Length: 200
Ligand SMILES: [Fe+2]
Image 1 (spheres, rainbow, N blue to C red):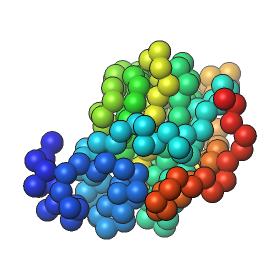
Image 2 (image 1 turned 180 degrees about the vertical axis):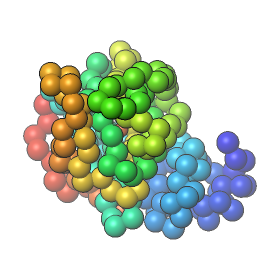
Image 3 (image 1 turned 180 degrees about the horizontal axis):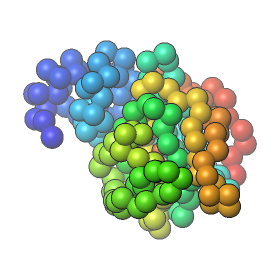
Image 4 (image 1 turned 30 degrees about the horizontal axis):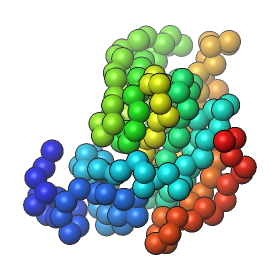
């Protein structure tokens, strides 16, 4: 990780880690996509500052839209213990993941000639970063910890659909992506733009 003084050079911030969602969005808007990995590596957000934006469901992990513009998309995913994604691709876009809270398992597969071949299983704890693109393969994410998990997912460009693996038929099917909630972190106070009723 770069020293705090390097952060200012890299991201033109005031120096120090990226400590809030509001600051993260501002930094991303003035950072070239080629430097997004470095941005993700400098996130150091206290989970308590994200609490006002979280949305929880007992049925599935939830996707909270933090920012969506023509160049990138930033999503907060809220995971109850045990919740996981299907195996999916990323529609030829890049994805950087920063884990804010919890303990996760990422399983990566190669997808060749209709066969899924296990490539790697990685464990991710708070403040770790991982990267995914279709050139690497397809993956699934799983909150394997006993506590609720929070992760930030940065896509460039935004992903409006992806292909998810259906074990019952042994193939991938296209899925349109959706948000469970929209929030506005540019305001000084937490603002929920659109959100269904929470399960708890
Ligand atoms: Fe993914």
